[in-house]
Length: 439
Image (cartoon, rainbow, N blue to C red; front, side, top):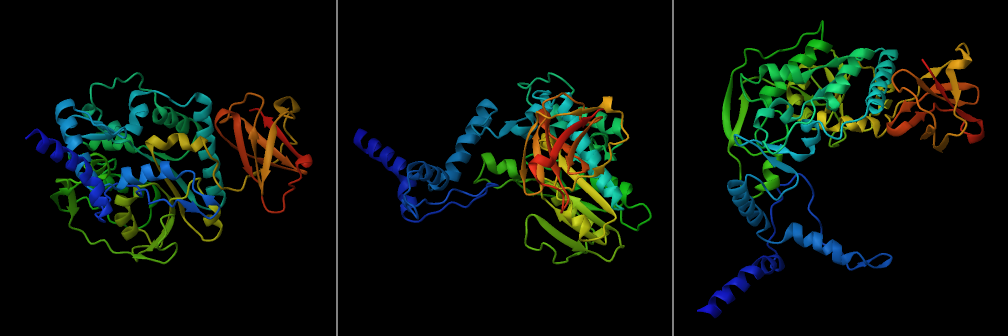
């Protein structure tokens, strides 16, 4: 009998490998591509990374993987209120949160004041460029789920400070006059009416997205006809899973609530960027409003409502933000939506925006510091580097002097900067100088 048990145990251990050899494949429910079978030989010879690549392939693809991961996490969730998946946090009332939002929730690893100012100056310059081209500008942040539902977070995670990236940025944007829509306050005010976020997903549901849609349209569509869907009827359907759900229960289909609105959503893809995950265009006959909409994945629930109520939208998932679209087509509005957990990206890379020209000749020379020790590099027409002197990113200007012309650069974290010079600008490093103009 003992030998029979041992044989069964060995067979169970070998079963995933045997099924994989026989061609049994898992269905991919995760929001990422699975590792592919590597080659032993590459074009330049033996693939020295084959053992590591094969390990990743096997870990992603062994038969019954999804079922075994699901079973293990069901056990740990129900016994320990936790999972072995470092991307997730098990909350109360069957809520699951994205682990990347923990710093925002707890108020840890917060951007310093200079980085917040640099993010603010970036948005100030983006607003200036849009307005100079004749467009309105609006920036908004899609809140993390635990910013709206902190009461459902696990007690294991203590809030150290209420000053996080979003709260600090909101204060700064207000101080420096950036057109900003506060969705966090609006969603918090309305969360008692209906759940606004999916329990096993990082994103808002249609109910939450419609609140965001109405707020956005009230800011940018003044004078245009559009539907607000305030009286729209909806029904609850219990068939939703969610992106976080599949992180930990990949073989288990969810049965969570999603709302379906009984409304006509009529629009069409217009062919611009069609088939691309980076840019896509829509058109409707509702009005002649035209929007350039920079976004992340929170736009997906907004898209049907906005596309049906805006004459033309060019959606762009490009980051850094690429303003070249502004000069190829006339828009009425530049709209930027950024999820809260990615606020720090605003100071990681500068937007692809031609630097505004400045004239510092009339400024008191005592207010101008020549950073002649600054090391910079030139890549095509982009000058980037790191300043050697302290400065206030929101108040001061980083000036790149190219030949006899001066341009304001975008500030980045830790004193960095980036400046996209216009075509025809002087690119000889011996004729480029860096200045800080104090305010």
